[in-house]
Image (cartoon, rainbow, N blue to C red; front, side, top):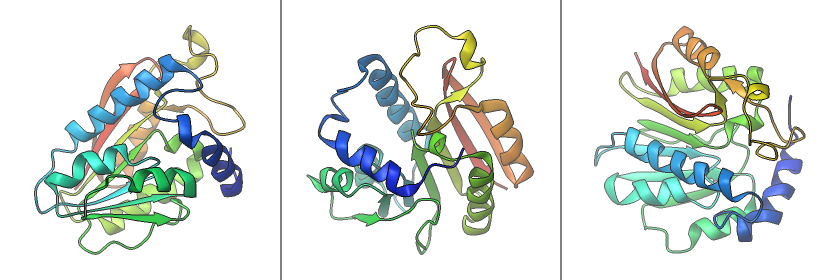
Length: 205
């Protein structure tokens, strides 16, 4: 399902003050932080990397990577989330308010990250992102994605009520996303963290 940008912006503006503390669902928040750590570790960064963090939110991924790369650009539709991202951010971090479905041009881009944001897109929008990434990244460049990717159908998993508001997005099959990435010129590897949470690392061939 397509989710309007203004709907997402209002939602995240409202929860920005409690987002990292887990004001809504602490168990889900724990997994979100776990996914953040895995995204950062799996990025396998280099000091010369230029990173675009899609749906950067409060900047957890961007600020973690920033000391170890040349430049990080974070984009998000929520002004209040970006306000929190700027707190204590390194000098090589830049923050862009906008629609991650229309990513900004970043010179020298080598790495694209996205943590807990792609579930807000439908499959058509995701395929648009894959095509853009394939055109934009150099050979060897990477997409590192953490999200509500299911390896087991969500209706077969207990204890996830409230993790995803159906008005704000949908679960995607990890296996189908891997196949799509490979069809778009990437070599993809899945790391399953939970039956409905996974991390995909995809290298541009």
